Image 1: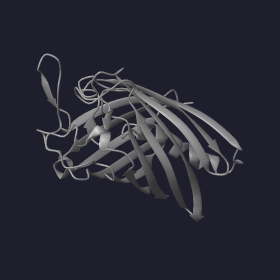
Image 2: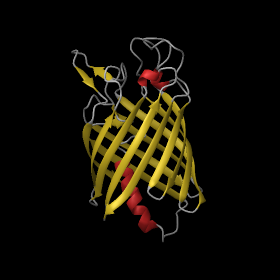
Image 3: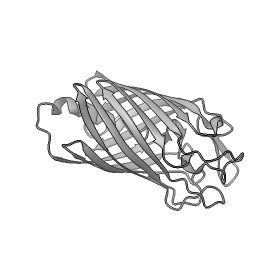
Image 4: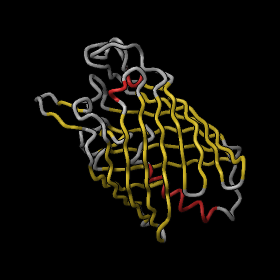
Length: 257
């Protein structure tokens, strides 16, 4: 899930881009990233039962605007049952600049959870989306449209069957601004729509600050949602439950190389 917490790594790239404007763009660019976070929040919802996460990935970009990438994170078996406790994201797309200072982005993203199945069914959590986005200076917007059921939600897995959930969508609005040298403020607001299952709709937000210390970027963010606490609750094997959409503070340390 191209995660909220990953914005920390993006901030480092945002700062570096200022210095890269005077240098020629290489035809092929390969980068990697590694993050350790106190919680993995995807669209405001904890994916690790409010426990820490280790995350990392690799990206390839061509000077024409095409790119490919992979990103990975541990996830909780209390939320992604019967699997390896792993999320693997595969994505690719095309970025271009139709007008000065505005970058458009279109791509495909696939979330893969090895071995994980919803409850006692054979339905998988794997999820595919197409996204359309744009960035103008400090502002960005992106809309993701679900090509598959929303993380396995359909007539087989829903408590009250109402059809499949293909066509669900997520709107991501963000503002990234360098408030001081190597220090970036992030503001985010999002809206998740789940087709045919409106009770799962919610808003989420993030207020974060991150500083690039050279050896790594350290970030602190407050993340929350108005998601239904009864629906967005996870339970472990001992019966202990956690409301995974509650407001929390996330600390992270990341490095792009």
